[in-house]
Amino acid sequence: MSQYQHKKIFIEGPAGVLQALYHPGRVGHPAVVVCHPHPQFGGTMRNKVVYWMARAFEEAGCSVLRFNFRGVEQSEGVWDEGRGEADDARAALDWMDEVHPESRLWLAGFSFGCYAGLQAARLDDRVTHMFAVAPAVNLWPFAFMIGENRPITVIAGTADEIVPFEKVQRSVKGKSNIRFHPIAGAGHFFPQHMDQMAELLLADVRSELV
Image (cartoon, rainbow, N blue to C red; front, side, top):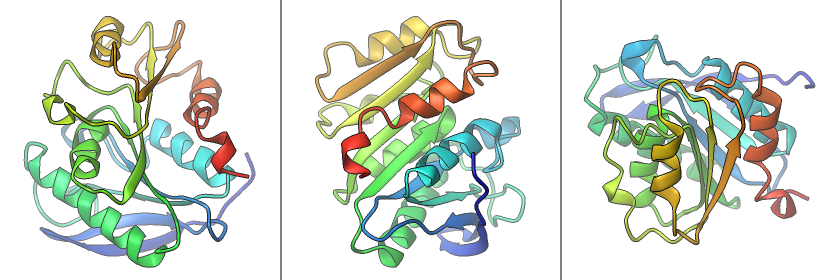
């Protein structure tokens, strides 16, 4: 992947400032907020999967914001069991919409980041597409997504050691708005399948990125 410069910024969050990395993309291309995995288990915006997700969107010309949830590295506040973290994601969406009012707004999350991020997106009509990579459906309740009909791209590894593949598969069954992309043999962190994950992340939106 080509090299991109990222701006180190701080945005206003509900519990204090949130540390973030921002990459401006091409005018008119989507603006994407990417949410990282569980802060209590070492998750940060520098997580390798989050990095590759962000880079996939950047390579496609999108503006991308990845940020640290409250209490992570230089972000202020303390862990709030997913509730406050969803509010942090809302603040990130607000920031991106303010900076890119002309762009479609997308939300992407990895693992716990799906839980926090999708809560924010569910109540935000500005978000036109959601992306969930290895959503932790066995660890967090996703009932708030019932009735959602906007397009969602879901990616899961069949050999995920943290989130059983079958539970993700069941969670998307029968939902016509969800495009489900299983990756055979991939674990939770996609150690041997990162390229495939990044490719599938954009599989449903290629026509919107030209």
